[in-house]
Length: 75
Image 1 (cartoon, rainbow, N blue to C red):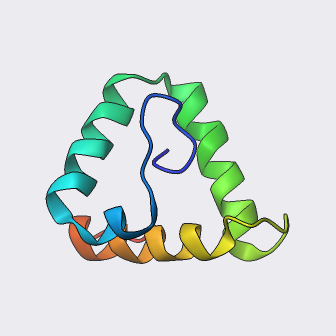
Image 2: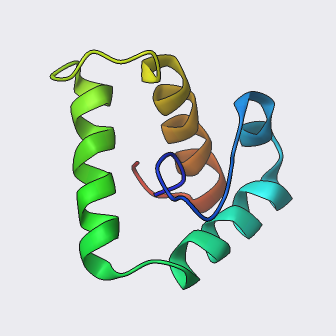
């Protein structure tokens, strides 16, 4: 969701800012439908697991670690 939501742009070092990460998650949740979040999660998982090679792989991995750290959930 934080990688693919068209309503926000979260870049490189933004993932290290807990306040920005939480605000971005709130915006993305408020501005998306369940089916969109499901599709984005699948896309991110494909990139994270290497099923779909992407230039976003490093960012998606870093974002997953930030989400796990900030929200205390597995990303």
